[in-house]
Amino acid sequence: MNESSSVSYLVRITNCLQTILELESQLEKLEHGNSLLDEFIVLKSFLEKIDRVDLSEADVERIEVATANFLKELQVPLAKSNFHDQVRRRLQ
Image 1 (spheres, rainbow, N blue to C red):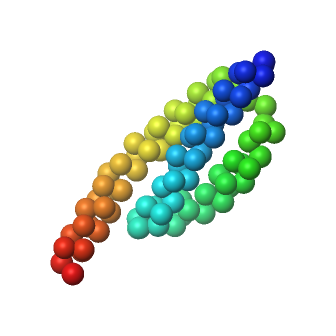
Image 2 (cartoon, rainbow, N blue to C red):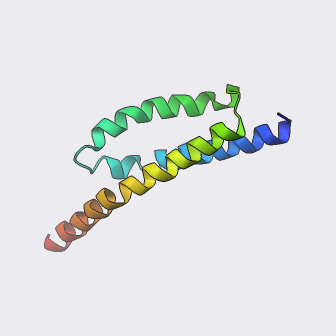
């Protein structure tokens, strides 16, 4: 693997992990969000060490697909949570 590929993989993986970590505050609102938040500790640790991991294109693609699937699975619960928050604010 050349250095350009390595940097590209690193950027792509970092983007996936940061995208997931940005959801932390929204996940706190979900009924089962706390169980997911426990895994964020692992993700944060991995992100700190990502530059020491030997990555392949297949690894990166697998993580990108997993990230996309994770975000898709969260769409409905997060939308419901945001809707309920809006209703509560209107009622106050």
